[in-house]
Amino acid sequence: MNPGKYQVAQMEIAWLSEWESGSQEAKGRDVYHAGSGRVREEWLSRCREERALTADLMSDVASLSNLSAAARRVISNGGSAGIDGMPTTKLKEWLLANHKSLTSSLLKGEYLPQLVRGVEIPKPNGGKRQLGIPTVVDRLVQQAIHQVLEKRYDRTFSDHSYGFRQGRGCHPCIKQAGEYVSQGYRHIVDIDLAKFFDEVNHNRMLWLLSRRIGDKRLVKLIGRFLRSGMMQDGLTSQRIKGTPQGSPFTPPTQKVTLLIFPSQPPFCLYAMVNNNGIISH
Image (cartoon, rainbow, N blue to C red; front, side, top):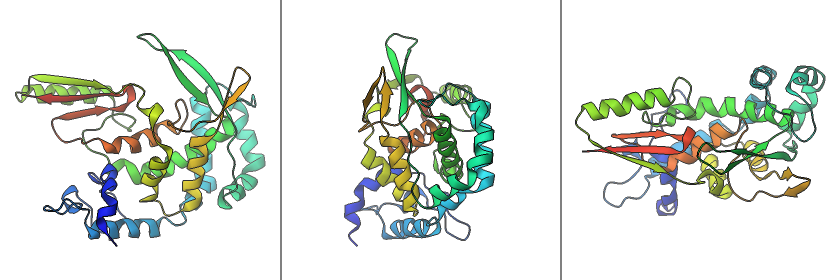
């Protein structure tokens, strides 16, 4: 195997630290050869091990306990109905009647997402943000996937990343920035990457996920969600790029995408508003 062909693996490697028990943790220094800058074969071997250990990850997604927890979360979040008009208040009843067929379609790799309902909302500083509202059942499946992926990915993110993470948010991010200032840093560079998540390459996103997820059914289903069409004003359009905005898929897909950013001190990354602060002397 030629490790040079995996140079693009730099998108995910700086903070890979969550591996199954018994495996050595992967640190940033483990990834590249100091001289050539090529990806180490040891790290690629750990990726292969991780894929082998996640070859049946869809079973975790489709388990009744996970689906039930996902349903409770979707119902709690509320929100508008998708194109089928089904409200979140009907989800519990639907799951009780259909959980067996839903589980079967997920395990067989046959689940097909429906179109999302396109909605535009005003931005605080002008302009509009495009949202895609999935059906309630699609939100259930997305939330079930989110819960499984979050367990595997969250601890791989930098300690300096604050957006979309449990127990974190803008206030801890601001506090950390204040600590940098107290250490003598005086300049803050505030970076806003306009429409960054609208331009995400689907193939690159799926490649990134497939480095650690061995279950092809799950990666394929995520691809279906990413590419599901949007219905707005009676017209249907096909999405060919970008990650979902306004669904349970927003946090996991955007957090994984943000692995392309270096996040070493002094750095504060807050994905919720797409603003990144680099603090320097």
